Image (tube, rainbow, N blue to C red; front, side):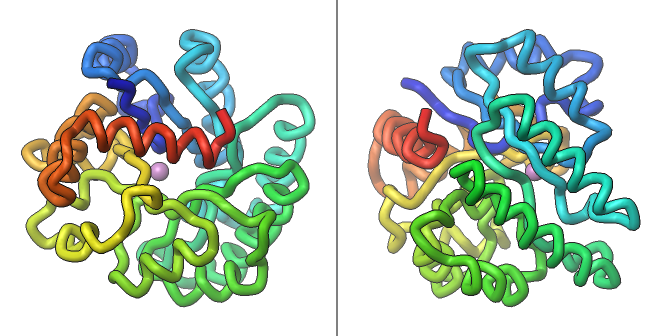
Length: 255
Ligand code: NI
């Protein structure tokens, strides 16, 4: 069984004390492919160090996370462009709009989301979308940018059935993680109406731990709890879910 964590911040300072043990636990659990979303330039060196340690398992994305779009956003965009010119990445992410923390940055977040979608198209890469309290704003931009050259993952999908269908209509897979195990997570109510070909697995470690670890630091091995829940929801084996979601991730990231 090959399990793919399509979204894990293993370079985060949350893992500074025990990173190798965390990765070892995941590898032992069968998680052997890790897709690493960027946050901002302050983490770039840590991401490169992680990939150097595990070159066959770690696949890096490049981009600026919407909650890290600040006054210096154009410098951050230049940093992204420079990295794209010098290295290979598997996606532009995570990018998008987050109105939960700070609504005053909406306009800058929109500028950055659009600019980074352009980069994804230029480099023929998928995008990995972060969307929090901003479905309308994200869909507005996807509507403008939609086409065969726009594809990717709607990371940590937490919307309604209709929003799920809309995301899929823009060539997006749904990234499903710990939220599916929450009692109030809601997506477990309709997920079985979404074909598994649209689903990929993720943890978003160190955030959003699945039950029974909710509230604690998340790590990639906990993806087994997500797998278990999806096996219940779809009424198929965990092996089957692991296989199809790994295949889906391969088709998005083209590796
Ligand atoms: Ni993330």
